[in-house]
Image: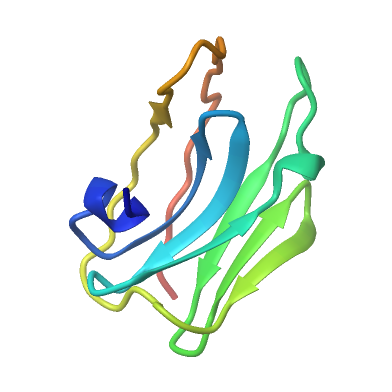
Length: 104
């Protein structure tokens, strides 16, 4: 199953696919993913920042650059979303403290 099936619009996101945390970007025609699970720990606060420019998408975890995508860069309307996809028996919980969005 392609990740693109779950994202039918352009976006950049960090999401949990079963027990693998991934940086994801899509231009609505194809998708690029990078596994970044090793930067997360159970019961630990994590700050996530995603910066989209015309040339790349940068994913920061706790103010440290962890992934850069230079293909499949979203360029249309962008959306903010939070979600978890769980297709096995792994228990997944989390909460969002705040979301901030801006355009320069």
